[in-house]
Image (cartoon, rainbow, N blue to C red; front, side, top):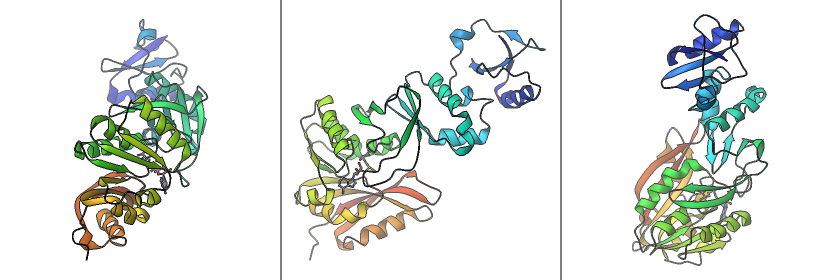
Length: 337
Ligand SMILES: C[S@@+](CC[C@H](N)C(=O)[O-])C[C@H]1O[C@@H](n2cnc3c(N)ncnc32)[C@H](O)[C@@H]1O
């Protein structure tokens, strides 16, 4: 069990060299201990030494370290860009060129994230009415249900049957920080409840109405209401447009997290919102001119005298050409004709 110790910045070059000379030991992991990189070698070559504490310390600190010598820099970038952790399930994208290495990649993820029990790979984009993506378990327990914690709320969900993205946690926190206790909040397109549960949990005097079409997401949202012991949230299974129309002037705030086509529901959201209430409108927009694009979508549905754009932010990049944007829109009803 021999290793050579190298500086971090030299590690990749030396690993390549050892591989070329058939001296690199593929069966063991490259280790990162107290600022040094320890590279496993097959024989006691010059500078090699026996590492006594290998077993105890053989826990790489990051995926980059665990996969040193297995993925090149570009492949590593591709992998880490796609990596999501939902509860104890790691979700990755494995492109054609990485398929051969998917077993090693899954092992490496599990060795870094000790709480991971399942590694699943994406088998397509988010699609359909319910915005769900096909997944395939490639490592660990054969299941796709888990429990995830975000901003203090517990959420049970099935990553293969409902939409959920941990990448929106910052945006959900931003919205929570805007909500004042006592507000009436309608969350359209509520999924398993990440916006609604946290608002109901942290703002106990708020009345929260959460609307979702996917019956499986609704089932989980109902379970999550119980899991978080909430009394101030009403879960409704149904179409956002139809349900919003039954809440005339109810909401201080309406959330519309369906970036694919929330604009179709703006009129209903406006109807459900009080005068001077806020609509948080999410949409995909041209990365070159995101806000211009998003504002145009709003003004195609609502009269410009009835809206004031009070906030805007790029939530996340979506594709090379598109970004996800949120507009915070103040509703002006007193100016209706
Ligand atoms: C992008 S996901 C957002 C889910 C959740 N808010 C979150 O952040 O994880 C959009 C959700 O809207 C739901 N949905 C799509 N069309 C709907 C409609 N017309 N009425 C209610 N929900 C709808 C989908 O099933 C999906 O769960």
